[in-house]
Image (cartoon, rainbow, N blue to C red):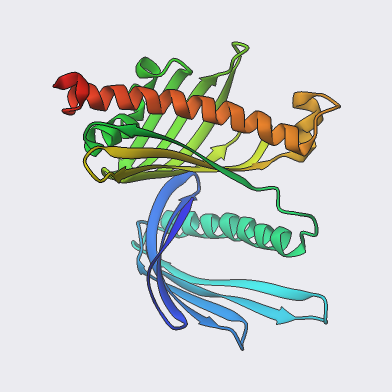
Length: 280
């Protein structure tokens, strides 16, 4: 769902990962050592999350010919308890996620066409407190009442700052589509997310809400989206004459419209209760 480099020293780095394991949102830190000559990356979790007691492994790239290679993803692990069910849970999660990661690596390495990723921003300025903006964005369980384009919302937060958000969003024609996202929330500064249930027109959608202090007071609030179009569904969704570019513009217009609506209401909320113009 999200990854950050916490520290880096030469070929060694400490990373923090947020991911799903058997459908549950988890976070952990891993120490990784890169060996460019040996074409391997070894890793060891420094802070695991239940039911994992410890885990490590390696990515190993083995040349097969001048134009092909074999990639092996190795794991060793133990459960945090003696319950056999925990070991089965870990094995299932490792198998599922490893297959997904290897397939994604293969697809990226073998891609021959241009990358169809697009990234775009929408920003508003708020004469108010960044914490109030963050609260509005963080309290997504209230979006059904606060945002007109949200028809239904469900929020799970078993660990503070790590949310699973599912919602039905209304489109301009009155129909709704369901999305499910994992969100990593950093109080008063940022919320990053990745959709794990997507509309038909996208194969990837990640985003972030960024809250930045402004010189002279107030904050800038940015909604950033990164999207990859599902080219197989363009004709079905938009018609036979639609192109990748028109699909990108369609998605951008829809996402920016919802983002700007959310940003506008977050601005009104913060300026109303957070000491901005309305409250003065």
